Image 1 (cartoon, rainbow, N blue to C red):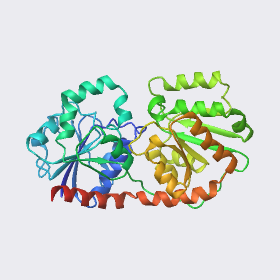
Image 2: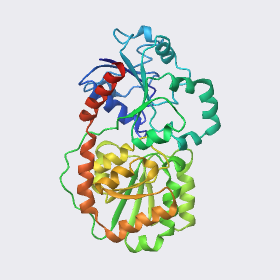
Image 3: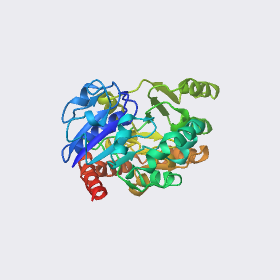
Image 4: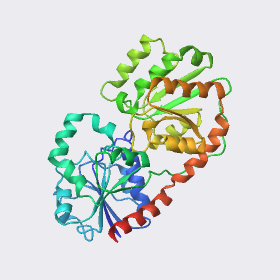
Length: 361
């Protein structure tokens, strides 16, 4: 099967797709004949190594399907990575014109909550272009069942679920803190999507209990649209400086070091496609506190690999109470490792190939 992947990645590693898309394509290349075209001038060095050969507008300046090498100028199927980053895209226009089946992986962008974010801009964009892009897709590839459920309230194109994956680290069973609780969040510092306002308010409402149990949360990531400054004002106002701190984004070995020293990974997102940072934390044996907006609470609950909450302050406070008073990190950490084993990229690539064959068949 000849698969053409189309992306518009920035190359900024703090954005999940810049990590998951290359890993996905690398795994798929072990099974199918693939070509990756990133329709801008960005290309990271690692995108052309170890089974990857990313091309961009420097390689094919026209950005048109006809100029790609055979057989990818007439592929069997096209995979569109993300959704709103393709306004009036030339190559997608060519794909539609030639009636080549394409699959969209929206990564949470079609959910009801995501549609409310920058609502007017998206409403206009949908009317002018994106409704048509979704309508003519062969299918929508969602990352979780909940993302599919929430998205299909608006988008009627048939869909299926293939999760994101990870490269499982070689991690032995670890030890957890005895005299403190080390909590981490790794990801964009984005107040609305990541629900960091909910998290800070919950910590404020439990200030004394968390202080008495030597709890500390470190938020690692890049500042988005002044979110860090707004959060720091709230933290200062409620005297939470001893409970919450910020650090720069971490990647690779530095990120692994952080996770190996973390007792609980916390993600209180209002909406996600599939939280790669959380799955990576699980793969290091870190139990997770997750809200329903992460689209991953069912899995956390089914494996007893952490604590779950609704996207409101009181529910997050209740989950934090369980974290500090039960302190069952060891048992939940073992379960976290078992849960992470379900998300190997090689397994996911085989499932993906079968789904695409069914679409074509």
